[in-house]
Image (cartoon, rainbow, N blue to C red; front, side, top):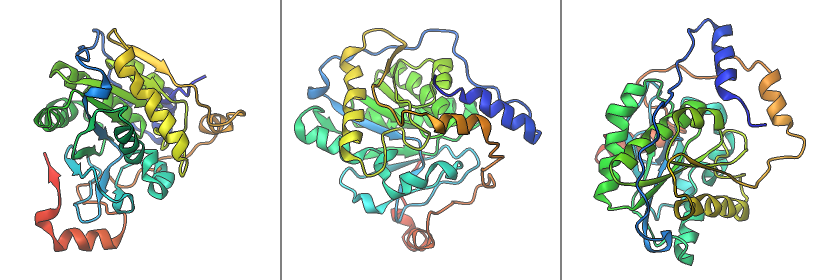
Length: 295
């Protein structure tokens, strides 16, 4: 069975003395923008909420940072970094960014003609935004403006943490209302169902691996390709597909989530940019005009 992240988070916060977090719940069907052309003849955007930035850009801070970053389509993967309030989910993503920012699978799909064109730049945010108001009023409109300026037909949304899944599902609903078809590639099924985005593809992998295992280009490619097929195949608001990939046969990782009390692993939530390395900090401070932050 899929992990019940909402219940796990609720119990953890209760043990730590926090008030219950009020997850978003949509009572109404999601907005719907049908694809007017096949994906093979369409321009596709990417939004990843794992806090991706390029070395030299200003990193994200952890107090409901609702800014966005433009990531060049031709960027060297070795220059990609992460700054996200749930740093404990980033171990493999920092080794292989394609786990959370599937740029190489998407570039291959573009070369093969499965995707008509991959928009340039791609987009990043830090989706661990606890304020749903900030998502609706700041982040979602900023991403809609950026994607509409690129004239994309559709966007692939890739979250990281539980709150990221809520954030990306809320953004998807906003984008569809703005005329952009969306597909959320997700691993926290209960949270996504609660928000009810227009289209979602569920991958039953541990958080931090929303687009696949590290250093598994064939698997990452297969996951992203099958997920994107939903843009052409899904025909009704609220469509959800389960992708046919398994992390492991014994599912020990799920039992560990329920049985082990990991406490509060989040670093302090403040407005100080959290760089992955000190070299990143020096690069950004030396070239503020090229920092690449946007709102």
